[in-house]
Amino acid sequence: MIRILLSIITLAAFIFLHDSVIALGLKVGLSFTFSKILPYMLQFLAVCMLIFNVYRQYLESASLTARRLVSILILFGGSGVAFAFHPIYEGDFSHQYREISLAGAHKDAFEQGLTMIALPGCGFCFEKLEEMKYVKKLYPQLPMHVLVINQDELALESYREESEGLIEVDFFPESTLLKNIITDGFPNLIYKPSGTDQKLINWSNSGFGSASWDYVLTEEGL
Image (cartoon, rainbow, N blue to C red; front, side, top):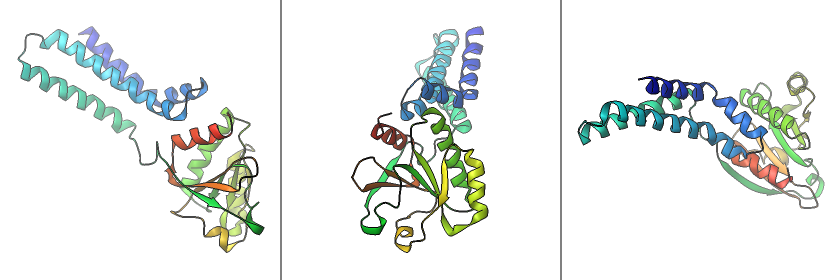
C-alpha cells in the first residue's frame, strides 16, 4: 500500500511541478519541444509505476480480464487527471509558417530576429510577450521586437511597460501593403534571418509553437 501511495504522490508532484520541469529542461539546454514533452513523459511514467504497484499487490491472482480492466482504468484515469491540469492546446508544438519576400521600399521594414506584430488590447499578444520575455532571459543574444498596430500611444506605452526593457517596442509602419501580410489574427510573428536574404518566415499565433522556437534558435546559432 505504501508503494501505491508513493506512486500517487509522485504523479501529483509531477503534475504540480509541470511548468518547473519545462523551465528546468530549457535551463539545462534541452530543446523547446523536448522540454515541453518532458513533464508529460514523467507523468506517464508515474502512472505506469502506479499500475505496476497495483498489479503486484492486488492483481497477480486476478483474472486476465480484471487485470486488463484495472490497468486500463488507472492508465486513462491517471493520464486524464494529468491532462485536465495541463491540457495540450492547438499550436503548442506546431511550426506552421509561410515565407514572405519583401522588396523595394519595404525590404527593410523588419529588423533581424523575431518580431511580434501586436494589436492594442490583445490578450493573446500579451501572453506571447510574456513568453518572449522568458526566452529573452534565457537567450539575451536573440533580437526580439514588438510592433504595435494602429499607432495607439497608450497601447505602445502598455507594451513597453510590460516588456520591462527586455524587448524593443515600436509602432508598426503605416503601410497598407505590410498590413496585408498579417493573416489569421493577432499576434503575428515574423522572423528575419541575418545576412542579405530578404525572405521572411511568418507565423500566426496558433502556428507558432515550441518547434518554432527551436527553428529560430537554430537559425540564430543559439
